[in-house]
Image (cartoon, rainbow, N blue to C red; front, side):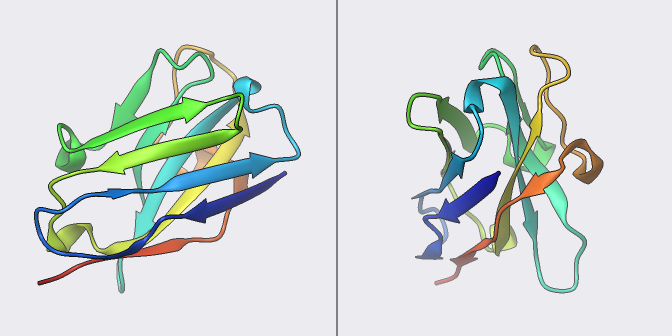
Length: 126
């Protein structure tokens, strides 16, 4: 299983970015996807997730209403859309995946996922 995250970059406060996570070596429709971020000096935290059935998504409170996650199983890709970005959103963002245990739910904890991709850096600054 391999995950390739991309789409990071420099954006001004209030701006938007669309990240992507391309998966290979698996049939994505059987896996949950989680997005995590790690800012300098801070622990890695779960940001959003999407379940196998694509009917359940999860977000941490600080990104609710600003971030949206979607998936394209045919393309084996997951797309977190990040709007109204703020400097505190600056971090390295990672995608992770795990064989779904409950098709109608997904997790935001590191231990929920076994496979991890490399990160993509998001910097929000004026």
